[in-house]
Image (cartoon, rainbow, N blue to C red; front, side, top):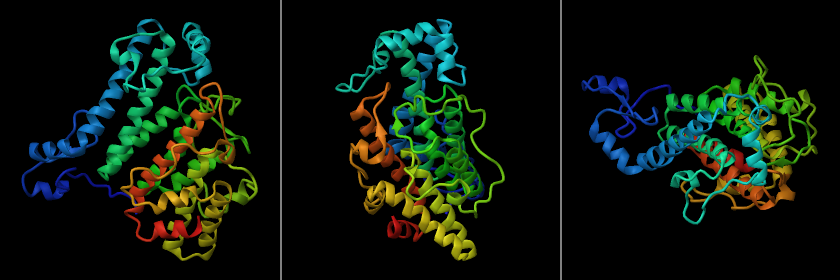
Length: 365
């Protein structure tokens, strides 16, 4: 079940209509612009509970650090408003040379959990550029977390807009976020749009490719000017329409697409009792299981509040992952584990509102 298109207090959960009867109005968090409260007491309660950690320590910190990096680059004459990463590097060779010199590595003090710019250090413009990209990515993901935890329809809309904006600039950097967009659309009750989006990317992604961090070289004709199709038939068999063979190796991050396709088919079946849609639901999950094993199934069998749903590292060869310029083999294996873990965490919020769907997924995964 999708989130309800209602505005309500994130703490006491009373909606705008109920609050009006008490002569109260909702006020929006001035930082994340997502959380809403009916008064200071509710705001303080939620702030002490969880909102401070995600909104202030997470979203605001990353947003502000990203803005600082952006300002440094723009003051040096480096315009970040480019559709593709290659276009930016072509026009900003000084930044590119710094990145090459560091062998495409992003410097971070993992022991102390901070970045050079957080300490007021500017290593070089290449590291400032990586800081901008990564901080923007983190702040966008924080928006999604705030919206999902608050079960906020309007918050998910804002997060969706931020995701789409991110995947359409400096391509292909952070374009992997496209794999998380269909679940956002499903949570908003926009299954048709989720199907259109999935079909666009399955059609336009070269087949049987390994996932390389940064997706360098995957798409030969960047940038994409669009990110979705229109008016596609979500009742169709996408495997037949796009000529996807059951033995064809899927692109790693698209495991999310096949799970979301299954959910779309299940939603159609529940509404129509069309047995063809039930068969397609099973087909999507069979394909995911055939190529990804039981990693998704095992993740869904953990309680939703479990601290971790997948291993920290997953075998690169088994799942079609490959090290590249942006990351070595260990790095891409770590990305794979975190990516699947985050998707399952997001999926759990939807499954909590869809009785029976979790077990149906587990039965066929």
